[in-house]
Length: 616
Ligand code: M6R
Image 1 (cartoon, rainbow, N blue to C red):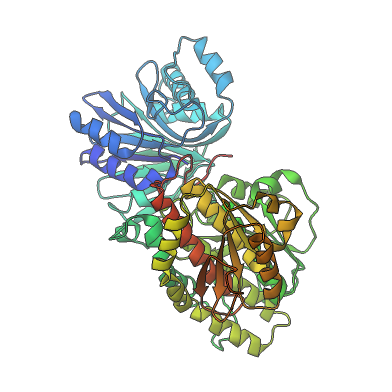
Image 2: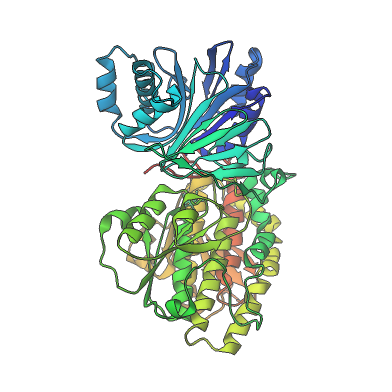
């Protein structure tokens, strides 16, 4: 939530910062702003709305300095106004600051600062932190040789409760900046005669592939040629410089209309990448490099607990079905935000998994820490290399699907489903799943990319259906067993990008209440795959039809529904049950996408949302 970027170097800072903000815009898009230090004073331009608005403002009077910061905001404290946009300037004009996170004790600090003559132009917690740094800067002389701005930041953070990724500049110190993090991501890009700090690598890769993932509690002081990382108690940290493995092109939209469209159609390749090199030589099980647990430790696991949020939780719920079905190990899934406070009793031999595309979701991170605090090992499934969750977990699995930019998760979701199925296979083969069943399972997983290609080929038909149904205001998604979480996911996709009211339900639960919603105005999307409960699903469809509810049926090849039962039928390939949730996700992703396009919605940046939720 919120994207931040800081540049200190030899080139003009503003063009690079604006481009970085465009790449970070998916993290928040309520307002944007930039501050450049030139001729000893800050020039700050900030505006509500998108980066494009900011670019128009900046073009009116170009910024020439080589040292600056920029921010794209997802509002927490204070409404969406120009005054609340970042960067914030201290009332003495000395300090300018951008911030991602929440300062929880901001009112107490504000009271303290008001008593000392500091004034405030915004309603934000960030401006309070900015003035607190200015207060410490003004108060102290050079502190035992430490840079005065760095020392002021360090002091201010000692009195701050909450989360932050911040970048700070001081009017007296051209060519320098200070950045710090606690609970919000911050990455350092190490360039040639220039250094960069940003919320994620997408803002850095145009200049350098060399990055340092800063850890919580670290503070970095940067000049164009050097950087020095220290901890809160001033100990120097030896930096580990990593190389980013993806290129700028991976984060470009290419010929697609939206990132979401690109990412939907990228799924066959994404799935291939997620499973590449991860099967045993005998072709009967999955192999994962970074789990850091031995086969016998896995064998001793008596329960698995998953924690995640949003789409990632739906992936966990499908994985629950797969692990229970193929490995016969009991699984629990929980909203990470609930788990962290509920204090539920946990079985001794429980293995924890968290799933998070971004690896930065604060609730998921907190659930991970809570489980570790209780002495459990926690493994993570994540897409972002070097993310906080990936680093803090005891082991894990990277999704390897490249950057996902669209706020609505698609390729990350199906790759999580794939990894979940591979986990079920791995755990199953450590128990009672036979060699033959394992071989069949592996073959099925390897076929998934082609099956997804076939499902994607239905796009023109699904687009036409979307155009017929886009005027509705309510929609239900109904599925059973491992397709119930796909129904939840279908409803979430539709809600978040088209603003339609949608609900996912287990099909047979309809008669216990939600069927009261059914009328000609409320269509239902039904999953009706081949299988032993197909007849039961057909009965649920009949109950909807009897009440005049329109039905969009997603069936697997070979399913013949009674004539006239469904108003629309989308056929997907019949496949192994471990792969079915992946293939069944495609039509609901496409349906949501085309409905949102038809309604003229901003598909990649839906209102009120941000891709990476780093506040509680
Ligand atoms: O990065 P994470 O996977 O932890 O994100 C979790 C949710 O915020 C995320 O899946 C959200 O629900 C998406 N917008 C869904 O499309």
